[in-house]
Image (cartoon, rainbow, N blue to C red; front, top):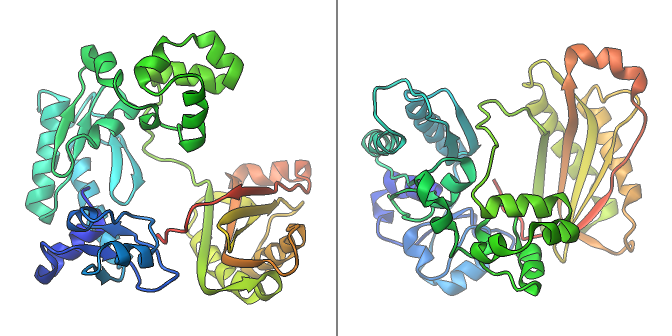
Length: 362
């Protein structure tokens, strides 16, 4: 979908049409959830601090997010997808992969299917969508950005290498700023240069990821569309108006544990064994601490107790302050196999400290 949240707001409020809109809570601690195309002209982007967005575009109109409404529109769009195929893999409220190798319609091609879907979305929701059509998922993902907004871009099998060759390596999935810099140090800045680089050297430098990079440079991706992805984690998190000390986080941890547990209660036939505590420092470093107890948590209160205790594993100065806390459940297994495996579970922990990006509320 094109600038989805902002487009829904502009659709539902005619006074916003043609104006630079940011879907965000106004304030020093807020970040932009979505920006209209009129706002993007000024450099406003999603995940940008709201205060910076306002500096870039003083006439920016802030609209508080309404995720209930966005989810309702997303369901409407997925119903359109389902008229064509059951192989739908949602990535978020506004994006999905569709396998249209075999469809429910008599349309002659994937391109015709994409055109029909885009037309139905426009007619039934008064919103626009962009699509990429290609032989596999990662190529379709790249192609979907090529003619935004309201565009369609097709990469046919015989066009794959020519399509990829001039692209910067940062367009490949999994290649972030750090990997981009490592590849640049080898003289690799484009996908064509990556393809020409010896695979054996890539593997020596980057292990299995080196082989994967070489495959991507050739347009190879065997990952299937997965209609039902199993839940990996259920969590709730919050950004504070003012940074807090670790010792002040307990009431927030307990409140978020209640919220996450309520979401967990809707999980069918799977149980979670691991409690995860997430923290973001005042200088945007993300820390995670986790524990898999011998017996899985059986209530929100037990979950909160474990999450609070995980603060003891945070080896930071006592005067360190935190801008965000999150509490989650992970380590999901099938309910019918859990009891048989219970005796095999032992306490374990996995602690991570990583540089973080500014928090984006979603």
